[in-house]
Length: 58
Image (cartoon, rainbow, N blue to C red; front, side):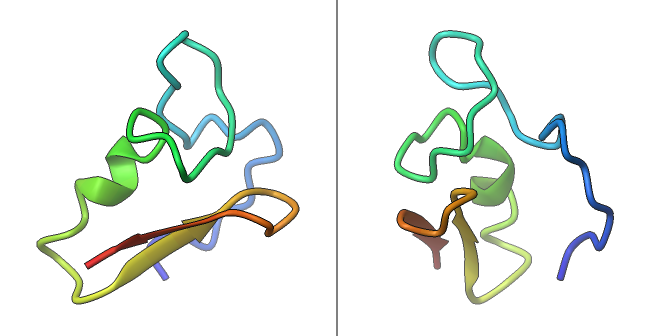
């Protein structure tokens, strides 16, 4: 786990292509922070807030 802080505003997310904050693991723009961790971990993953979409970085 990278951070155990809870941020209900999702400011921890990088913005999507249109400058909006959204939890969309299918968007490479929104996943930039996770993609940046790919060399530090063998496996990293994220999901949207209702857990029906997942992003996996190996």
